[in-house]
Amino acid sequence: MTLKKAYLFIFIVLLIDQISKVYIKTHFKIGEYVNILNQEWAKIYFIENEGMAWGAEIPGDYGKLILTLFRIVAVFAIAWWLQDSIKKNASKFLLVAISLIFAGAL
Image (tube, rainbow, N blue to C red; front, side, top):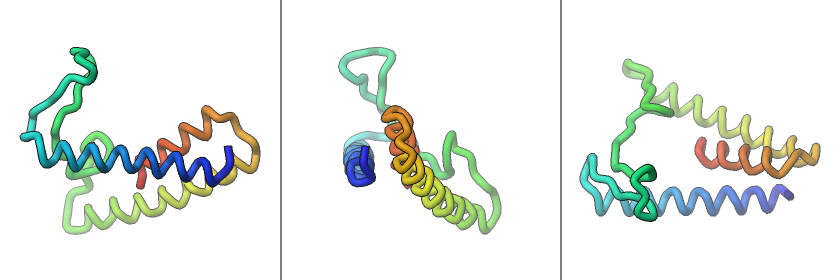
């Protein structure tokens, strides 16, 4: 996988993520859900998350600022990891995993 292909993959993942979030935000009520492919075990719920992963928050006046700075540092670190892994011809599975982590951090 080349860096260009990795960034294209990340862009597509981000596009799908953002389109689905906008659709859910504008068409669902909080707590509403839909089954994916009519499967009971796979659902998309509409919830709000003010923090980072799993709703983790840093309290206080500077909590949001600290989370934002952490996210910026993480994005640059993950981008470096992805580039380094591509240069070292890492497995495609690892490159896809890093790309998904990168898209999530963005």
